[in-house]
Image 1: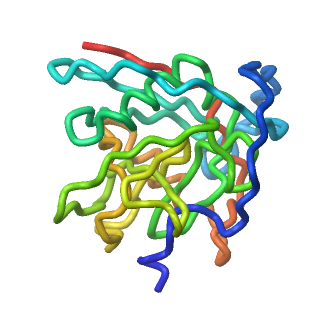
Image 2: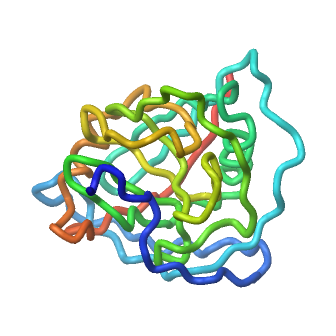
Length: 216
């Protein structure tokens, strides 16, 4: 069943180290199309090998990640209490511009949108994983943001690939580290979530142009 589909594409390629070099800005904004997306050049695939963060986020503070895409922006509040390791990792990757010029490579209409892979294969990551086992009874509802994993990895394993739920309830088992929830721009997420075909491939190019971290 699609609702139990593991949230990582079946193509899994081994990521090789290429240092922490940042990708050049290749996106060039043009006119907005009927779906509200600006035309951009497809960024080239890259491989990244980053260092795992050694410190956790302050549980008493709020951490918000805003993903600016060519189809609009949305903001995710990280849940560092439930998933301290994944939250600290994603915050660190944002600060390293890891997500800049990456694609939403999987769009399953009425289910999820998935991104965070600089290789564009569905099998890439930051060169390390973290582990935050989700609480029993975790539900992946509209606007939930969680981390993708392969079928062989333990529940709660996370790299850099994340998905945002566009269904009312994705019906997934509690196996995916809960990163947080969309606090603004959910309409943008839903609009992106309609840009997929029957094979869950994007029908429009959707690029994360820049991600920023705000603390309060």
